[in-house]
Length: 255
Ligand SMILES: C[S@@+](CC[C@H](N)C(=O)[O-])C[C@H]1O[C@@H](n2cnc3c(N)ncnc32)[C@H](O)[C@@H]1O
Image 1 (tube, helix red, strand yellow):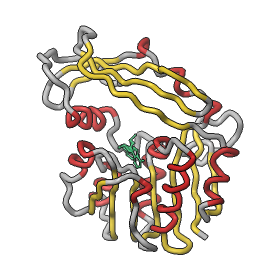
Image 2 (tube, rainbow, N blue to C red; image 1 turned 60 degrees about the horizontal axis):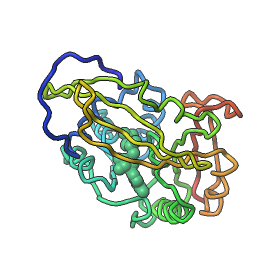
Image 3 (cartoon, rainbow, N blue to C red; image 1 turned 120 degrees about the vertical axis):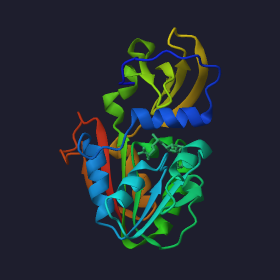
Image 4 (cartoon, rainbow, N blue to C red; image 1 turned 60 degrees about the vertical axis):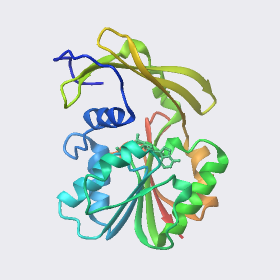
C-alpha cells in the first residue's frame, strides 16, 4: 500500500465492493508510470480484438477505449465485485468466469492476462484447461500475452506485516493493510491479506494461493496447449530473461 494516511473514519464492515475499490486505489492503470501497463496498452492498441482474462476492475480495457480503440474488447473475471467496477464502462463486453470457462471460438487476435492474473491458475489441471480455452479463443496466429512473477525472485518474502501501510479510500475512509505468508509449498505460496482499522483492528482477512513459475515449469504447459513461445522477457521493458529476473513476460503465439 502506497498512499499515506490522511483521514480517520469509522469502519463497521469492509465489503467485497470495498476490496475492489481498494484494488483501484492501489493499482491505477498508468502507462506512463508503469512499464507493465505501457507494454500491455501498446499491445492492446495494436490488436483489433482483445479478450482480457482476469480483467479485474477492467482498467486496462477502460483505458484502451478512452485512448480510442475501436475494435472488440471483452473482459472476463470470476470475481463479481471486481467485475461490477469493470461494468461501469458499457462500451466493453464483460463476462463472468474463470480462464477455463472461456467459451469463445477463434474470435480474438489477442488474449491478455495482466498484473499476474496468470498466477491464480494453481493446479496442473487448471493450467491445462485454462490454456486450452485461451488457445481456442484465439484466431490462428493470434497472441497470448501475459506475465508471471519468476519463482527465483521470491517476491513473497516482502509480503509480511512489517510492510503494512495505510491508505484512504475515495469516500474518505482510512484503512491499514498488510500481507502475511502462511505457507510456501514449492511454487505454491498461500498468503493472507488483512484489511484493518487504522489502529490495526482487523476488519477482514482474505486468503489466496498463487503459483510461481520458472521458464522451465511454464513453457511445457504452453507447448502442450498448442502455443509457440515467441518472446520471453525478464521485465516489462523487454529486458533479457535470466536467472536473476523478477518477471517472466511472455508472448505466446497460437499455432
Ligand atoms: C491481480 S488481479 C489483476 C486484475 C487485472 N488484470 C489488472 O491488471 O488490474 C487478478 C485477477 O485475476 C482474477 N482471477 C482469479 N482466478 C482466476 C481464474 N481462474 N481465471 C481468470 N481470472 C482469475 C481475480 O478475480 C482478479 O480479478
